Amino acid sequence: MPRFLPLFPLNLVVFPGEKLNLHIFEPRYKQLISECQASNITFGIPVFLNKQVSAVGTEVKLLRIEKMHTNGDMDIKTQGLGLIRILDFFKQAPNKFYPAGTIEDIPDTTSQDPVLKQKITESIRQLYSILGIQKIFIKLPAGYRIFDVAHHLGLTTDQEYELLQMPDEVSRQEYVWLHLQKIMPVVLETEKLKERVRLNGHFKNIIPPNF
Image (cartoon, rainbow, N blue to C red):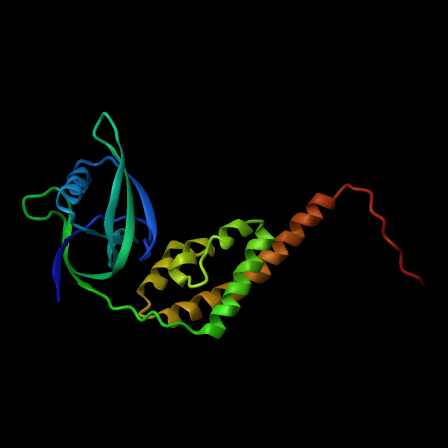
């Protein structure tokens, strides 16, 4: 059923389950966060893309205010909950400074394709190994979802938003698998180029061909 929810548009994609740290400095969002702390309410973060508020976003809860600055600014920790669709957007909620909207929850089918997941896992492990960032992957649990790795795959904001709109995990797996197939050859070639640049000017032990 549609419901009314405070909104905090940002020019980034927040995925369900993601933990996000924010520095709050605008008066309207200071008001919002203060109300979240006082009344335990949630808010939505729709993507601000192409100079407009997009229709799909993520509901977020305030975990805690990490630091309150002397000027009233706040450093906060939040966590994404579920996907939402904005039906109506209002620049100001009634008697408030911050935006709000009528929203509906988007159901999410979480069942995965285990074969595809294994392929994705191996490709990501290879990608991270090439880039020298294996430690990021080690921290992931065996039951990770695409949302858990989406920010670490070199996707653009537009691509991340496409991923956010997909209705089920298998669709997201297919999208990421195609993306990895496209970027892996580019990454490998880039690493080879870097190695050739590093070797330039070194003494080379090259065996000439026999004629």
